[in-house]
Image (cartoon, rainbow, N blue to C red; front, side, top):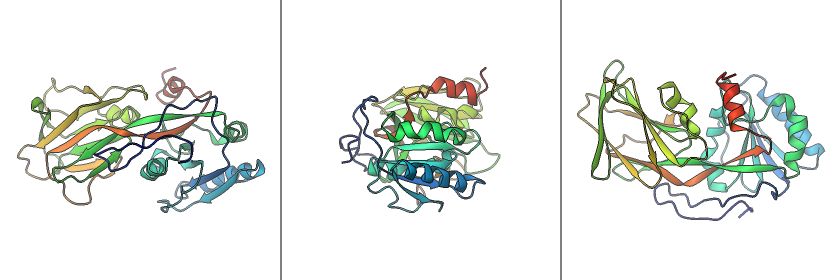
Length: 298
């Protein structure tokens, strides 16, 4: 343990971690950090070097990695990890962060990232208080998913089930236990967390959820009927998705990557995971200020 929480078992995910509520006024100073710069993004490596130099000047041991995808083992024994890039760069390290109980912080270097909450231009002012322990850890809910054979994993943003053919409608049936919810003729369905509510879910016409909510948002993509609307489900229930005689096998992705190594076996089960993703934020961070800025709400 590194002081960030206690362990419990999540039978769906196979990862046995959960965090207790953190007191933002009593966090420990950061002594050893990893910095991951996505060198495929112009300027990211330079920002990573600047952050490493700043950390070392303040007595913080810092390891900088510019390899992407980042190698495994990068988060072993560190107090936090700072990622320079877009949300995709941070999502690439999500499972390792959960497995090692390492809080993550994003340095904005993408287009529309909602997880990268720190600015490269303000690092000199923002980072020293963080290193001293002036931060909080937000525990973002995640999805657990598995197929009929028991294979599956976690998603921080979303699980997307789409038609396997371009231009053809797919047909899916969604139920909660023995209770049918709806049958859909659509291009696909997005199952999103509150964190992912501002990603594909939003583009598909789904609602925005506050990041502290423990819910699953289900949004059909280009549904064939106007009455097919997004639905929000609470934690504690499991959704079963069946594939209804489609001409091609559907494609499943989790956080933009293939959800299964092999072709999944339906039905696929989706629920709120008991695991949570630790996101490190400054004490002055405002979710609504971020929304106003990113979505141009004024």
